[in-house]
Length: 143
Image (tube, rainbow, N blue to C red):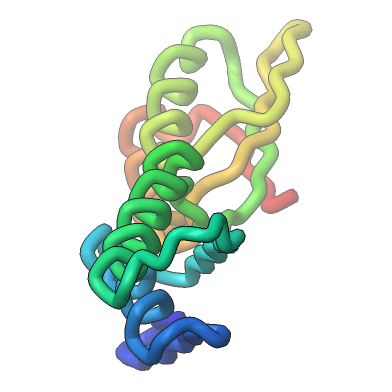
């Protein structure tokens, strides 16, 4: 886990020869630049003795394949908002929200209402751009 300059890690060989399983899996995680991640590899003995090198390679390749197949998802803190605005501002606001976050719900009547999320680290920058692009022709509330 990495947070504000701290780093904690844990890996275990769980009965395999020391350094043959946990460390190769950790090295794959590290090489992909992943944080706050866990990879579990389970090996069932099939009657063939792989030796240290074979075990290490099998664990490393399995971890890399698992990460590749599962995909990597970026997770970040978000702040939710509701915005009301006229149709003339629709495209500008929609584009800006999609640049900084995601729209969860849209409602259309005599005006437009979006319920959306913005990445927390970009909230101030988003508010400034929104005011600039729309000349304050919107109503924004934290939800």
